[in-house]
Length: 298
Image 1 (cartoon, rainbow, N blue to C red):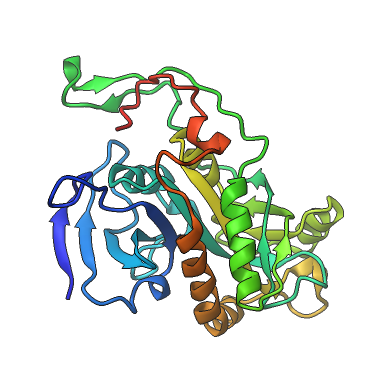
Image 2: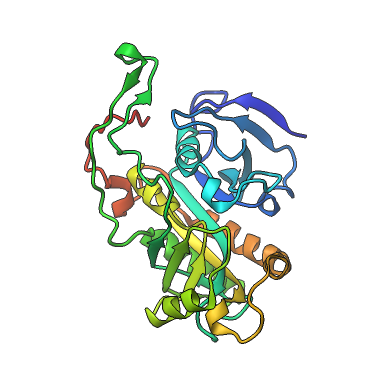
């Protein structure tokens, strides 16, 4: 049973946020829940990839957002990342988990490897990656119906939440999945896969895995003072780490499907551990230093 409603920040009795924790992933992460509440969210940055699907896991209120849309119609470079993160924050989310499929850049990171990165490298080309770009955004309450946020430079030295990373690693260990602790995710524009030369270059830099959706999610989350944790599932050896014909989309889907239940279990075990309210003590929660920046965060 799915109910559709316009989003509000709190639940019906006005005492709790609609959601504490957001998961940006595929339909496999929410389709098993009964009585999911579907919430449509409007944002100053346009429409998110899809509705939010609200449910409960381990006693925690969760908002699921299909990154590519429920019909998987959005390629990585066409996703409205700003709207997605804003939509999650608008319903109360303060912790975000971002599972994604990646290619392994080293032979030891073969299909089925779970890697919890601690760094990323941005190799994208055409993505809007900041809320603070000096352009006006719609605001019915402002004179003229729009406002211009100030320019803000947030620290992204350590782009992923340290608390979330530790929780994900503990959850994987509890599920007897020997996850890789740390590594660098290089994010490419897509939707094509890398050439062999590009892949060899990525590997020569010492980077660990390559994907198409890890940026700008983490950076935008930091600008909204959200905690963001990436969980990368290796679905293939990238072109520079294997000698065959290169990766295919069918191969990616097959390996991801084979591991979806295990990854979902790790995600939900992680959810049970995450602080999502005032008790958050990490840098993510105070990335803006208490400033009112003009983008209208609630």
